[in-house]
Length: 48
Image (tube, rainbow, N blue to C red; front, side, top):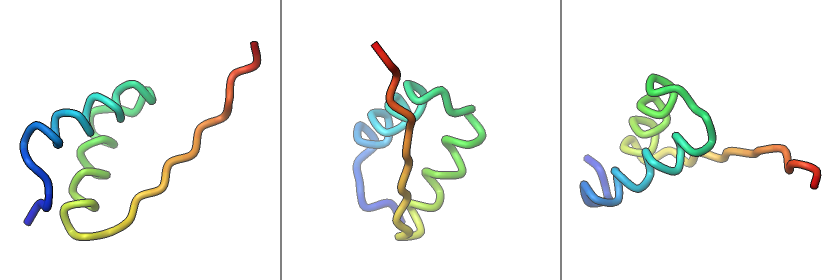
């Protein structure tokens, strides 16, 4: 059972999309969060 609202889910998907994750990968991560798991994402900083 999700511990966040639908609008929070929408916000999460938007943030995952901004990280260039596929729709499938974003869905998988969201399901893991729904199961109470902790998800950690790391991105490489872009040089200016």
